[in-house]
Length: 320
Ligand code: UDP
View (spheres, rainbow, N blue to C red):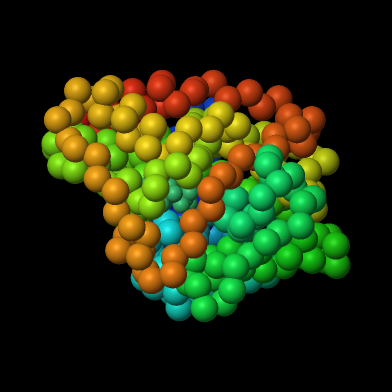
């Protein structure tokens, strides 16, 4: 089996590549290193069955060749991180829309199954907790940059499902909830690498807003296991799945936990959203996946809870 991973030098993509190689699959990575890095795949470069090309998914000639050469396509290449999305909306929208369009088109020509990673952002400001795959979606207005990300990924979902319905291209859509673990960069605002780095350097830990907002964090190792199982299962075509963890923590409590686990002298500071992101920024208070569907289709049981994950991230960041 040979898998193409677009965005394979990113945080989740590199873990996926590693796990596929470990079970004996061959892996080709296509990544433009916009948010991914060579460091993430440094350990894989010498492994037999691994290859990578530094290029953009929008380079259709290269992409088509790589799709031809693979059995399945994991499409992870996308603009990620709320900070990046707010700061570079044009790039976000274009990368997400055009990238998915060309990947689906190339895969459809050769009938290669595609797994599209979408995001829990598509649930927007939905208040019915937990979020189920068939729920209505409540996206904010178009003058708030954050929502362009949700909408672009949602269009990707529509397009993927349309390809399945109309062209019989096997596709499965996965909505990833907050996914964390070693190698995630704090550069694009993600909270856990940010807090851990701040704590380890005794800098202020920056809690945005009131800190009462809650998140549920999934371990990257569990997430890539689910991606592989959903790709391998034959009855997942045309389906959408939530993947993540259901156990919530408030961001304020997360900051305290990180401080305690690192033995840090950092103070906790509260930064208004306007300063952290942009004027009028809207955050969601809670975001919890309903995991019943994914559990019905594959055996999915998160192996790592928050403390174990934080231990791994702290160890990784200390080693850096
Ligand atoms: N956050 C924070 N401090 C930071 C980075 C993020 O308080 O340094 C908050 C952010 O506003 C959000 C939560 O942590 O409420 C999770 O942020 P992240 O960007 O990791 O993921 P999101 O859930 O926003 O996609």
